[in-house]
Image: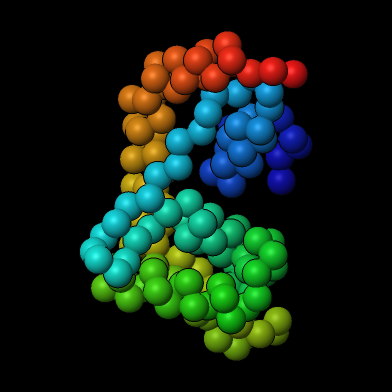
Amino acid sequence: MMPAGSGPPDRLQRTNSLTMRKSSPTALPSLSVRIDLDAEGRIGPGKIRLLENINSCGSISAAGRAMNMSYKRAWDLVDEINRICRRSAVERQTGGKNGGGAILTAFGLSLVERYRKIERSAESAARKELEALRADIGVGRKN
């Protein structure tokens, strides 16, 4: 394992730093991307974060705990992702010394990467307007 700061941050660390940056007083208003795949199914930051946590934790239950959600809620979201995408994004692993676990499928990894790319593109496209909004809000704000 590399010491902190010695290499490029992984995706989860980048996500955490974006979240922290957004909460600072001088941060831009934030943009949240939700993709409606059909009338009933959508993918947004919560489901993508769950997939990232499954990828880093190696299990649905640990990923859910990291997000303060029950295993049932995490599994229901995974099931929903698989259903709306009509492909498995997560594959359960059985057996082994420590029991089972879960991994992202090639499709699941691609889904996360594509979502994050769309998110970066949207943030980049909206940056000037978000800066203007921050300036407009800041002018009338009373401390």
